[in-house]
Length: 160
Image (cartoon, rainbow, N blue to C red; front, side, top):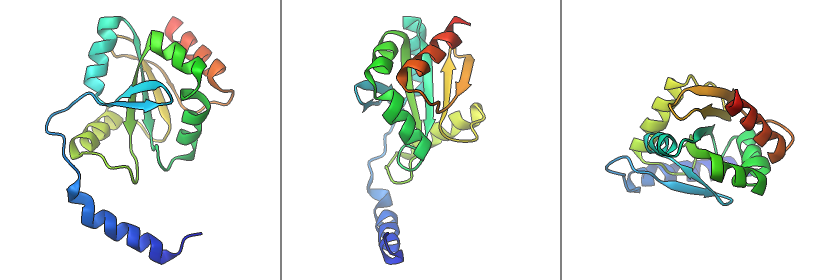
């Protein structure tokens, strides 16, 4: 267990270095690798890609470095070969992250906040499956069972 002084030191360092992170001047498509799946952070670019490729969009609203259920979902489902293979062929993946300690640009934070407000996100993880035009076909989160049942749930959502 870390002492109170440790957390004060970390907070002080974070406050002093907060302005040192490079700001992204314009929205960009940034790919983040989770296992071998590629997660975009630019929602608009992902929607355009999904429409062009006639794929559904899976949007993961997460607290990647502090939310236990989010970490569990990535470890048990999103990083597994069954999910990655299915996603590669059928989905465009979007990560909308609200980390505590991983740096993000002000633009990315604002874009993530706007998406959370747009879709009424109240907790993490929240996973949305959107059809190619961008309509929500399924709202879910962590589910036990691993990648097989999770992929089946996605397939059923898309089929309906």
